[in-house]
Length: 326
Ligand code: GZL
Image (cartoon, rainbow, N blue to C red):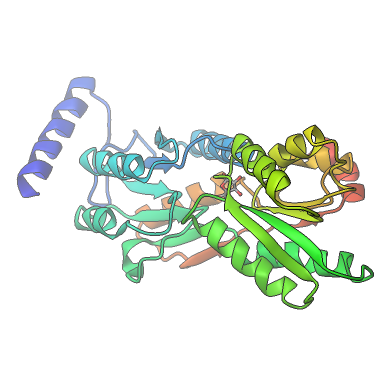
């Protein structure tokens, strides 16, 4: 490790000398732009409308804050995120931020960042490591609360309906914090009504094509589906395609509840094809840059920063659609 980091420091110094750029970076790392910090950001991928909005928010906020951003897209593969984090350590960035595609398997690479004296910020999703010294803070939504909001709405909406209500669930990426927690929150909420039953549950990997394929299978093998609970809008939109292809009316024959509230989801909601959307705010860029600057300066930051978010009915979607930022 010492030899590698010595080589890295020499290489970085030569590079800085060659381009004449760079400043005397603090925080035990190098490579900061003249007056700002350098951040290595390892993004999950580009799997959904939410992710696209999140990436834009991070990139726009970095530019505005004068943060030099090194950005990578892991195409939803953990090994690619780990590679990117190792590359940022080699480059001696001032701070590393990432959204862990899954909860587990991060301790080794996060220890390498800690040993290199590079602070890490978790954004959007968290890790299940018991060693919370491996990261400075976690900025993101409360996914259990999002699942609870979805379940609470269904309990209220079905209160006047007699008999069993069959729910099929389109789960997010297997092992991802939002998939695990949205399932947990939803199940806890619907436990209040014994008529509400999840009869099928399978991952659609947070993608529109995944949601469509799984919904096609559900429609073939599950009679009497009453409700779809999709962990994100994109899978819900894929389910709508499958439901319409099966000659049924989404939002009426089969009710749909999703999470995110991105533009395409809110449009379907305003048209009555989706019945309820729980918002998950992707616009984390400004808060992330503020936290990063504080962390690099050695200032204390809260261990957990929960993002503000709402939920929408079709009527509410019609009112806000034109003014939505994403
Ligand atoms: C949630 C985020 C999820 C979104 C999906 O914070 O991690 O990943 O709900 C996205 O749309 O793919």
